[in-house]
Image 1 (spheres, rainbow, N blue to C red):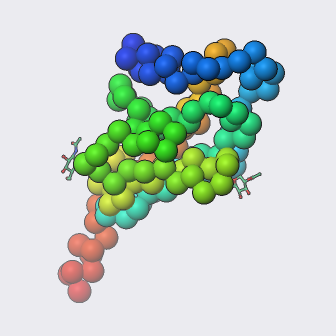
Image 2 (image 1 turned 120 degrees about the vertical axis):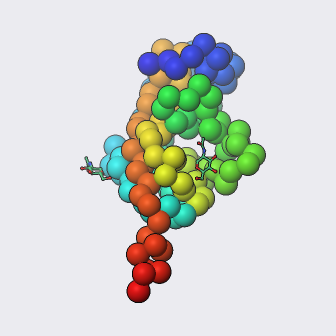
Amino acid sequence: MFRGIKFVLVITLITVGETAEDRAALPSFNESTPQNVTLYQGETARLLCHVYNLQNKKVTWQKKGQHYPLTVSTFSFLSDRSIRIEHDEDSEWNLIIEKVQRNDTGIYQCKVATKTALLVREVHLTVKGEICLILLDL
Ligand SMILES: *[C@@H]1O[C@H](CO)[C@@H](O)[C@H](O)[C@H]1NC(C)=O
Ligand SMILES: *[C@@H]1O[C@H](CO)[C@@H](O)[C@H](O)[C@H]1NC(C)=O
Ligand SMILES: *[C@@H]1O[C@H](CO)[C@@H](O)[C@H](O)[C@H]1NC(C)=O
């Protein structure tokens, strides 16, 4: 399940501060948010992840197959891309990717690490070729 030792270290660092009472109730996801998102190149992706009972834990987003998270809480590790977290309400930790490209296609994992469990909710993103190419032919 872990993609690399470096990610394990990141998770370890962000779970420091957990207390005994946090273990009483685990965080949980809204299981109704879409897990299959299909867009055209250039559109904005909005991948939903609603977490309840988060307490002092952090939500991280990671693209499956990559060693590093894209975001931790509302912090984005990608300075060259318009990737950000939409955190309007307490439970919402939506991943926004501006101007998606075909190589953004993949499985995005919304993760919450506790001392005893790594909770993961996956969203499949498919990016198709540009719709404008069809319109230009007219
Ligand atoms: C869970 O997500 C669905 C889909 O986005 C939404 O309609 C629903 O209101 C959410 N449930 C709660 C309890 O927030
Ligand atoms: C997800 O979307 C793809 C199209 O990109 C489709 O082929 C597939 O059937 C969908 N899967 C589900 C579970 O809806
Ligand atoms: C993804 O595609 C875009 C545009 O085609 C390109 O600029 C970028 O370098 C690609 N990224 C990767 C990781 O291949």
